[in-house]
Every structure is written in C-alpha cells, then in structure tokens.
Amino acid sequence: MGILDQQIALVTGGSRGIGRAIALALADAGAHVMISYRSATAEANSVVAEIQKRGRKSAAFQSDAASFTQSKEIVEKIVAEYARLDILVNNAGITKDGLLMRMTEEDWDVVLNTNLKSAFNFSKAAIRPMMSQRSGKIVNITSIAGVTGNAGQANYAASKAGMIGFTKSLAKELGSRNIQVNAVAPGFVETDMTAKLNDEQRKKLEENIPLKRTAKPEEIAAVVRFFASPDANYITGQVLCVDGGLVM
Image (cartoon, rainbow, N blue to C red; front, side):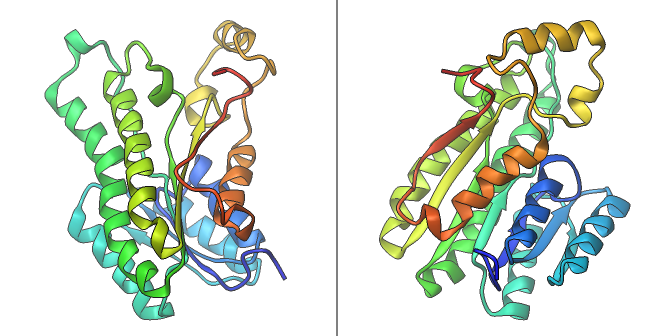
C-alpha cells in the first residue's frame, strides 16, 4: 500500500514535463490520477496508460485551463465518478517571453489566464467537495521567477508571484476545514525549455546553481508528493523552492 492509497488526484497540465512526472509520482504512491491537458493528446494518453499499468485508475480531459466553465466541468465529472477529490495539483502553465516594451497585450493576457486564472478555476471547483469531505490537498506549481522576478518574463513572473499570494490566501481560508494549500517553486528543470539551450548557455546557467546542475522533473514531483501526503498534514501556506540553491 502506498502513502496515497486509493486517493483521487487531479493534475492540470499533466501530459508532459513536470506535470507528467507529478502524475506518475502520485500514482506510484497509490493514488488514482486524472490529468487535464490542452493539445498534447498522444502524450496525455501515454500518461494515462502508464498510470493504468501501475494498477491505478486514470483519465485525461482535454480543455483550456483558462476556461472557468471547462475547469468546473472536469472537477464535476471526477467527483461524479469517484464521489470525492483528495488532491489538486495546479500545474498548467505556459511562457510567452519578451521584454515588456515589446510584449503584446495578448502575450500578457494568455500567460496570466493560463498560469494564474487556471489555478483560480480549478481550485474554486475543487474546494466544494474538499470542504464537504473536511480534507484535501492543493499544491500549486509556481516558479522561482515568481520569487525573484526575471528580465524578459514580466508576464510569467507576475503570474507565478500571483500564485504565491493565492496559495497563502487560500491556505488561510481553508485551514479550518482541514485543507492544506502549499506551493512548489521549481528552478531550472530538464524539460523541453532547457533542452533548447546550447552547451555554452547550459554551462553558464549551471555555474549560477550551487548544486551545479538542473533538476530532473522527478525531483519536483517528489516534493509535490510530499505536500499531497499525510506527512504534510501540519504544513500549509508554504512555498518551497526546489532550485538547487539558486534562491537563498
């Protein structure tokens, strides 16, 4: 039996990268894991198959995380099927980088809506069943960019900083209902984004990280699994940087 045995989890943006690693980590710990995704259907189906191989139930829901209606419908479908929702991981996110003077209004809006509004959408839908259960875990995936800021990422950093404030506020609202809300702030992770770096860029990046390397997605997922577990029952409103010491 795993530490999350028979719990019902939803991971947004769960088709690849960090989201995929989180979904598989929760399944390895015993949870039945549902994922949402926007366009990567083949990758989403692959994650579902991997979860099912572990003997867990799974389903993938295609949607726009920025849509309140679609997000609400996904949560309602899961609760209708399983009569509960124990874990929500708000991981959906995109980047549209550029200096502010060149950033379009569309680039600002789409990043804020996908990264921050999606957390509002899914959390608002999820807290009703969690409050009825008088238990639940919400884990928000923010970023060290939301802690320190980053030139060329005003939209992304603003969305991730907003998620930190959202995490703390929601933790205060839901604490009396035995619902814990925490955030994980990854640094640089081995994903499609870092795969585009050339050797010189990677070397320069790693020189600034005390541990001298980027993270594996599984290392982020392990911290999410901890926050989702009973081991974190007395932790709420916290932001944990998983960044190799980059922010300290």
